[in-house]
Length: 471
Length: 103
Image (cartoon, rainbow over all chains, first blue to last red; front, side):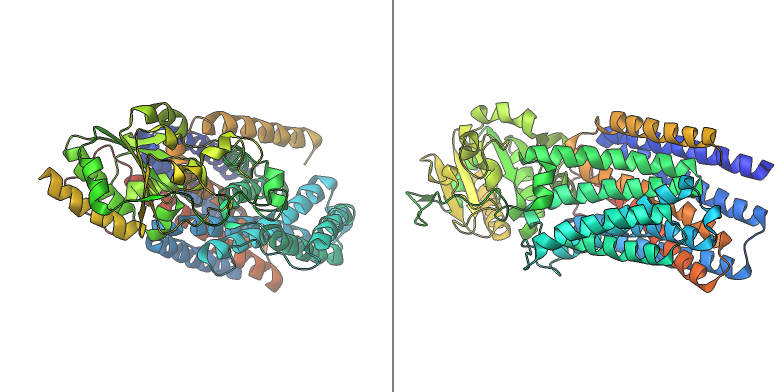
């Protein structure tokens, strides 16, 4: 080992340590930004050190430098543009896109490595095993994440897409890629095995994500994040770079933990989600309602405003409907008005509210809601009995009390105890069902008032009504 | 690479998983989106791998693959860190006095 390559490896080690510290600092909103900056700085240093290493080894051609600089600049410009332009509601698509490119890059590294070596003797199991795994995981992540991003963006149907023969294909494809992986491990020099496996893995990514419904996206994104991490770690084995192994597995753990948390919050297993979404697998919608709503009490903006203005404690329950209507700013304004008036306001955030883990918190932060008012499910549930008003905006399944009883599609799913508040107001456009397709008992509760309107318009009306009462 | 090195690599692999679980399970749900986006940026380290293959490429196929890998990796790194920072800047303790955020 030369001195330069030794030094560069120490730099990589230091960078890996900074990634761990950076993620550690993410455990509090106050220090999180510093953590990200630390991690980003370490990444820049690692990239600079790699440039030095490449230059020092001198094996790179002029074209190689062009490829390196051109690709790097183009990618950086695209990334910067996307990161600056993205709306906070579109964050899940962007994360999914970054998963795709990360997984794709990892797979290309393995493909390239196998192409470089021409003789079977040059590739031992030490390289062929991680290379085959890298290609499989990376390619599945690449195509799967693109489909997920397409679904979130509305380019691909958000509903579970099931086509004739899908089940059969989902049996054949994994079988052929197990066979393909084995073939590539045993004959890493075979181009047929290499290209065949890549194509099969890309197809599998598509058929894996297509049948998954929109409500399951938080779990899918977390799972694909874990996949990307593993693909990068495998690329680390192929290239013999521990920095890639460490960074990849850190991400993989993070994705794994979030996948588990999200699946638990929906009371479903990861396998169940991957095999089929709500209404396609075993969780077929139960016909609980006749379609005609029972006694529902409809209320006006002024009725609700009086309740809110004279309350001492209000809990706001934002759900997907709020995010879809992009009404987070209106909600933030209303809450600020109430807070200024001396009302104790907090937000109850269900773990799966939004379209990726913790997405609702980001949307509310964008609307200047202080994070001290954001309460997680376990923290806020004991507070509902003291709340004078619980204001639900576009959250359906996560507030449905029937989840506490067995025998329906959402049985056992942890919910927000909105029904324990002294009174409840629900802002909703219609009596339509949530993803689970079951009636919400909360809406027919005598203490519940239904304010039928668009979230954005309704909250703006509430704000002006409340302003009249408090000033 | 000899067997001892493989053993070291596997040790690093296992320990990284454990460290990851230990560090990440303490992150509150409020920060789960920035966490995912931030860890997303960390897997952008793959750009280092892309640079290494670009350095060893000597065929058009190799150059093409390395170029695409570079674009992907650089996009992942730069976009990941910038967007995470943008999100984290929004988390604050008190709402600023009637100042509207630019979208």
